[in-house]
Image (cartoon, rainbow, N blue to C red):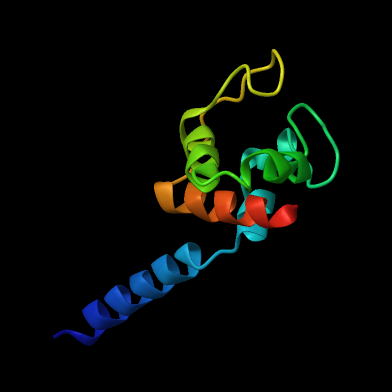
Length: 103
């Protein structure tokens, strides 16, 4: 195999692995979450501590939060809807798993 092709493939895998290995907190800071949410106080949307307290104890809490991140939601925290977010399914799940740890 051509050395340049091997380097390109390895480099692409390294970048993909690094992106997938992001923590929930890193994703929170890198994505648009910070525009409306804070860990410990209400902004436009609820504080993540409050989201963790509400959904963390539920058996399907991570799934519920993941779906809300991916598809948006409305009516759960007041009249302002949360739009769908530009995240991959894996990123949404990573964010949701991190959020529920913030109780």
